Length: 93
Image (cartoon, rainbow, N blue to C red; front, side, top):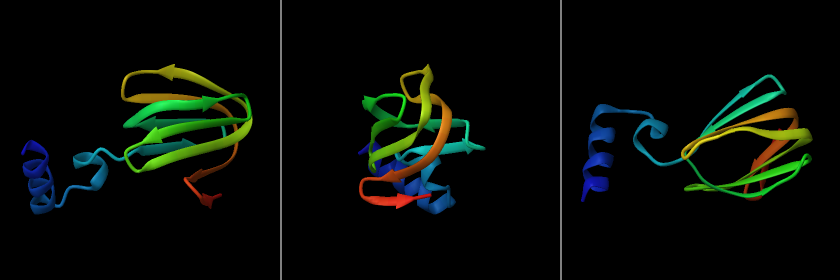
């Protein structure tokens, strides 16, 4: 019931989806720093690829020297040289 009320209030007040919903919020600063909020779990990570599970599907980050610098319950920070990222199958560069 709370989720139904939360969605309705968000729609009435015209809040952006990342404020009301559970979807991910991704902030990329240059090619070296990525902040991801509202992730569910870390599915895979290496220096070349990091895969995160979110409510909207998996997110893949690819690059060189990728490191998980900060890991909190609902947000994490990735540092390294980002070359691309994509959601499930649709690549965005």
